[in-house]
Image (cartoon, rainbow over all chains, first blue to last red; front, side, top):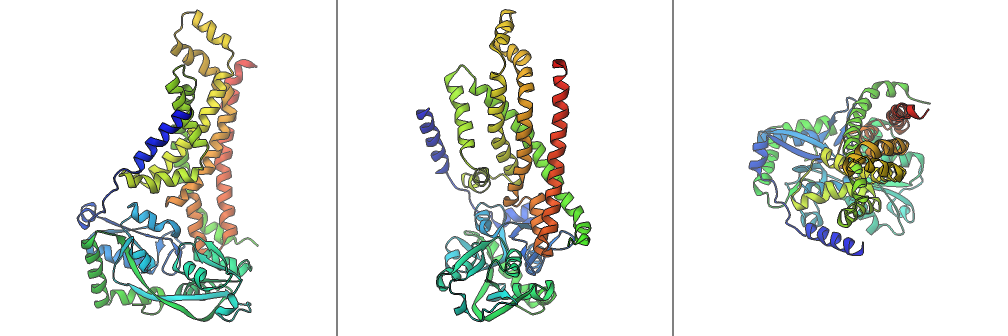
Length: 255
Length: 218
């Protein structure tokens, strides 16, 4: 038995160290006629599932517009945020078009398009909370979505923070309303929309923590695909398509 | 307390998710059963290499979590150039996983058949394969069906894990809709109800099967 376990483990390791796959190029996407892009579907109004069980929102329409301009069909794929980069690296989809901010750390493993919108990090609490500033968060239970820049920021900047990680913003909205967490940090527009559209019993606290630029992520070594995305973004900003998508979902132009 | 409007509106969408859950369950159940049977026979083989292969498979699967196996197949294999989609990955992980449990169940059924049965068949001139097929396995399955049924029910519930690899089955459908409705109670209640229907139907059908093959014992 021991010998067998050893041999089995050896074979497993040999398999694991075998070759990795190469990135899918623009030609392959055109030949396939489909451009798939990932998002969580848990991030209204940027991406979410509507009352007809359809994935929609700002990110989805931007992704579909890019696909249209490349001449293929855009297919949104919903996946958990903490596995979204692993899925891209494993080529389960071609892009991440789900409000991912461009960070130096992510640029080590991924390529990004030019920024497609700007927003920032904001603290939200229940509307009856006594928290009024970042300083009040010390030692409190703070919610963040796992694997976000917000998680990193809270861990690095808030003393003794009791960080609770979630799969998406709606979970945190419910948790803050129930009082299980004292506050959560997410995108300002996302939180503001939850308050406005869903009557979530929340309020914004303090100023923007920091500004972020969101990009469309793709695998490294795809210069043609990146150029095609950037060109599509420039064109839709020029001809007003971007403006109307932004106004439709967010009520402001976020370029 | 319950928002019935939400339930009425979203129930059809959850049903769509249930169809996907059912599809994965049935396919994984079928292959899981075949894998289980083969592994059980391997483990009972007189050949030491075959026996150890069967034992290794059952050991490695039963000693690791299904979620890790699922991620290994879905996220890990593409690194080796094997890219299975979410559906294939999900079915494969579930079939391999439930196969290991079925193997032990079926093996238990086989060894519970008295050795006299084997000896009698062999002395009538039946070969080992024919004996296994005609004499041992039919009796072994009668013994194994209640425990196999248990494995099937567990399999159906375990399909909820494939929601983590982008497959829009019942659990992921539910989670996605909570994201826009903020109604976790109604939504998860509906999901639980639909899972209960699937598992209960399976149990009832297997119970009927059990009674049918038990007829000659009465």
